[in-house]
Length: 305
Image (cartoon, rainbow, N blue to C red; front, side):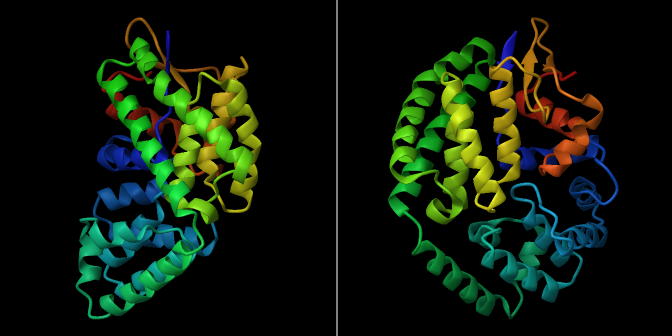
């Protein structure tokens, strides 16, 4: 049986947007319940759920803050949506590019507001200030290597996965060796050092370094510390934790690792404390297992048991 590589959460969230109608919410008041409401055009219900999460200081899945802005604006409360935008940008929790270019009903309405240019000027000023603290060269190299990694991964998936993933080894190995040198010289690439996208790229290079499980295990505590300091995503910690545990021959903790059988069906690898799995997933900003299976089925075009 072949190991299935866990998807990045941000693309997974986009996939979930496309298949949310086939998946049920993890629980009352959850992010994914709000996502379902958005799919049902219940924008106020979505905004109320996510607004309550935000006020309770609950974490969103990677990229989920944009849905808070979108639902609030689509529900007609543009002033509150603008306030969310400024607060989230100040916390580096909202990509400015998404605000500028994503084609969504709420965001489109927000851009038509007379107050938009002034808000945008403030947002760009915050971004420029933050950019001045970032190692731009390191961030760009991380993004370039992420791009090569993703090209190799998608080519393997298009070729049917399984043995095709061996073709990703040269890229993964080169990225891992380069990142080892970076960590030794500069430490783990945190959000403050390389931006949110650069930090995500660094995690991805480690996540796909299956040829070097010792390296993955050594990096895990670095990402755990970064996540505690809000310098990395908790979901990244969960996905790498499962990768490390599986490589060590142990049950995974968060249910991100699947294998494809000879019958072509993807099945969940052994998980510790299966009854508590969805609660652990929610605590790390991950969708429920049922929702994640729907994401995998959509992304890989195969049955998931």
